[in-house]
Length: 204
Image (cartoon, rainbow, N blue to C red; front, side, top):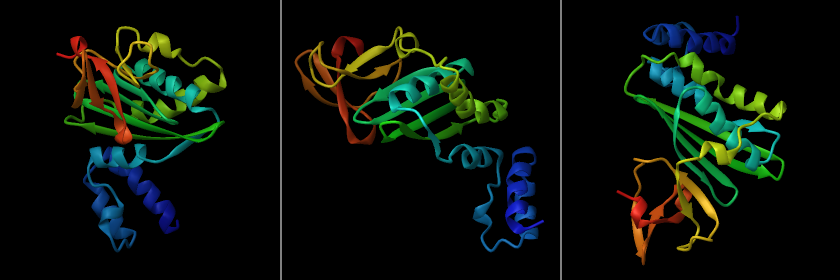
């Protein structure tokens, strides 16, 4: 068994028995123990934090990914789609998933996910299927419709006008950072340095 294969198995074992990671790393002759996650949460972050490419446009991948999270039992809290980039945040109890999406070409999208949790009670193997389920839905042309996923969420517009393009959707109770005001509109911070406008009456 070569070292690469051994390290791959070490990561897999670290998810099951967190404390074994250091021993496996030492047996593999790693000069840096930071190569191997040493807790269940770190192992999950390591595995889910890899880039994945989809041979579909961002406009299709974003609702497919959001639908995959919703089907896995997560509550969608934030969906952003702005300037060839997307961002999704979803929660299940104390577990939060954030997915960053970037358009590589008109027909290709790169995705990267991160999980943070105060608890390890959830079955983490479920999160491993999020990308796979989104890919399968795209292949079968059965991806969720964005309009259905965002029903009941507040709209964030590009400008302080109701007819301005919608660039984000926020669930009730989602936290926002206010950076400005324009009449009845609040300017809030979005991902990647962008901002959008939401009616003040929709912010508590």
